[in-house]
Image 1 (cartoon, rainbow, N blue to C red):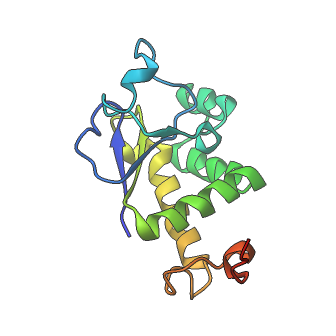
Image 2 (cartoon, rainbow, N blue to C red):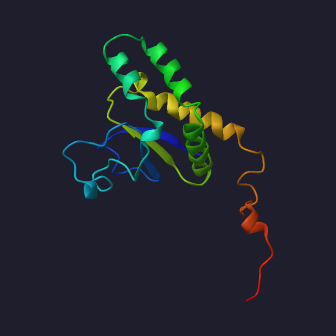
Image 3 (tube, one colour):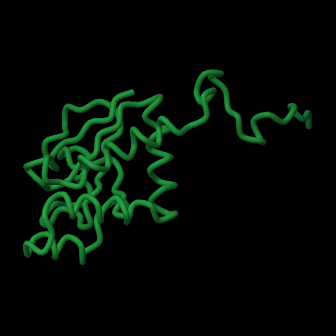
Length: 146
């Protein structure tokens, strides 16, 4: 399992899945340049902090610790929790990299998000990924001849 992070535009050499986790896509960059330009393979704004939270942090209304605590609270919402669980399961089979605009990861939500993905990975069922097969009901159904 690899869960890393990177700054948009600097992920060209990363192997695995590059996930954009900022609220906005890069300005002035064409969609067709997102992947080859090292921005992301898939963009998931559901994992970005709310615009209100970011504005408050930028205005100095929250310390970094308060920002991170509030962001964790936002990520407890069902949609975000489900996507985080999916990324955790994906990271078992594929290196995962979380990208954003921030230069300083220690003050960026992606550092917290990486922790949340790792925590979600630890919460997956113990046999997850061990069988090499698929545990979903359609996969466990007997083959049907036509």
